[in-house]
Image 1 (cartoon, rainbow, N blue to C red):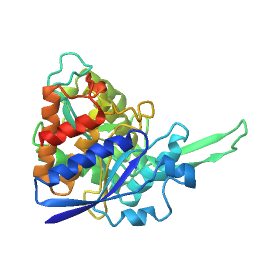
Image 2 (image 1 turned 45 degrees about the vertical axis):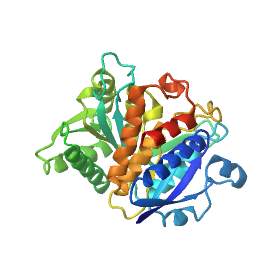
Image 3 (image 1 turned 45 degrees about the horizontal axis):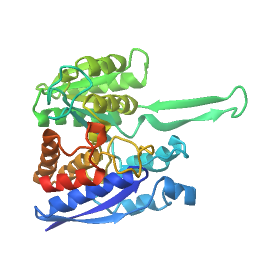
Image 4 (image 1 turned 180 degrees about the vertical axis):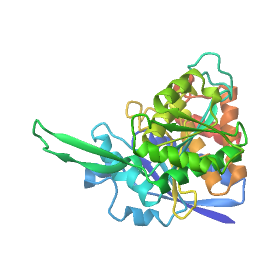
Length: 353
């Protein structure tokens, strides 16, 4: 029997609650298949930071390197600046383990109303691939004249040929594997960013020549943001830089009904290191502890983890259970117009497996 070792980081806020439901579903689905899990929990994040002055211990990355995957809830606290939580936990994990692909599906499921008028189930069915280790979030830059009137902050985007080519190639392969519209859209801003985005555009053109069966186009980020609202049904696979992918995936989550349905994976496609699976939503401190957080994004994220671990049929089972619950529309959290609790939704998903 296959066994998968999973490092669990609940984080903070609703992350604590939704991870509980994700683990519940993972344990249940494994009983229907010939594999099991070994879960080890690590209490890292904002609470750990308040006690220790760091988001995780100095040997945390060495510890995580021994696992098959990382299952994360959400990090963020109103008393701690976002750049501390991001640079203290999430970004070091992504960089250390070369999780250069951030994969985020956006699907309009049956039973869910889009804020966009006239959209039917699966009219919106796209995946945004975000470059995840360099670009605008490369953490290169510095300060001059801090606390003086002349204070300056310099933020440098880093675009390498290798970094651009590998995430673009992954996106072409995904468009081929999905076998839907067989279309890939590149997001750029080379009309204004005349260095890094030129490297990106040139990489896209080179890789596109290797995939004559995939249709392509290139959109400026501002035009893409408009088209995500005007005509999201035209998109299949979209690939963008770290910043552009970050922005577009939040739009993709909202137009498909709720951030509570938005799953996400930070992948090392070559499986040299553990990949990390976390929902798109944040820690939502305004609703933490109330038992009303939607666990479906975490559960759908668990399905992405199952698929990455090679458990395809189990992943399908989890996704189908969530879709059936949404179609029935009886056991839903308040963000989807229901009155059910986080725990009851998780239990209902288990019962639907």
